[in-house]
Image 1 (cartoon, rainbow, N blue to C red):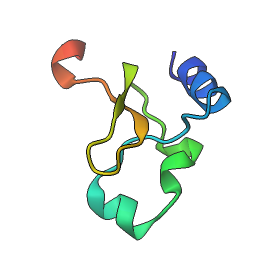
Image 2 (cartoon, one colour):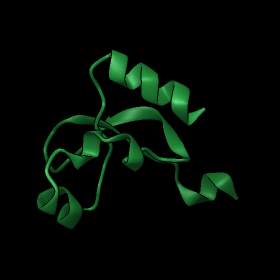
Image 3 (tube, rainbow, N blue to C red):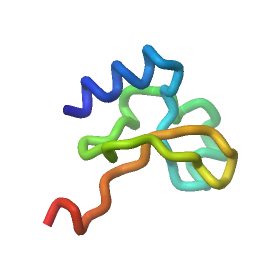
Image 4 (cartoon, rainbow, N blue to C red):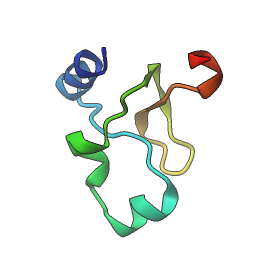
Length: 65
């Protein structure tokens, strides 16, 4: 599932994923690398309140339980 979402996101220009603030600041542009894609991605993309970009977040833990 995550690979299909990842490929679709990249094809539509939404390649970034949400990272904790310290990582995003320390490693700019790492949010576009495949290694940071989520194993359990959220179904929909959302606006990141920190930078206003549309990104995919991880699915909430309560959904998996």
